[in-house]
Image (cartoon, rainbow, N blue to C red; front, side, top):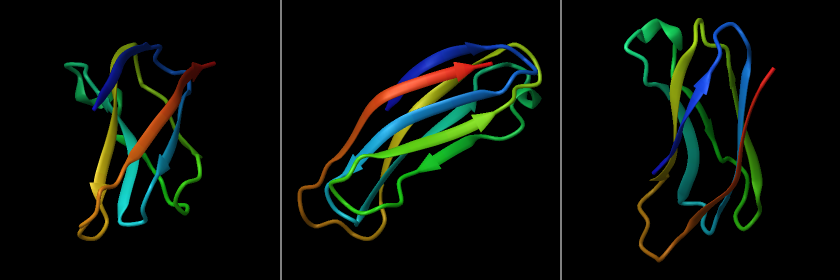
Length: 101
């Protein structure tokens, strides 16, 4: 799920945080930051953070990166099965924050 596109300044660290909660251990959730620039080396790798704690608890996920020049990045929430899921399950996201110093 696309959470948004964010303009960032080159040479300055960016921190993205997102709270995540899941209802079952068979399901994982997290987010990924990707470069939308036509210059692929602005963000040298996709930055990801994935939920790893137990169920029904909010976890703060964090990813930090430093773009090499001014660009726009896309932030996407992701949900995927860890093992086959046979029951109704949920992953919740809340409190997206983006900071740059």
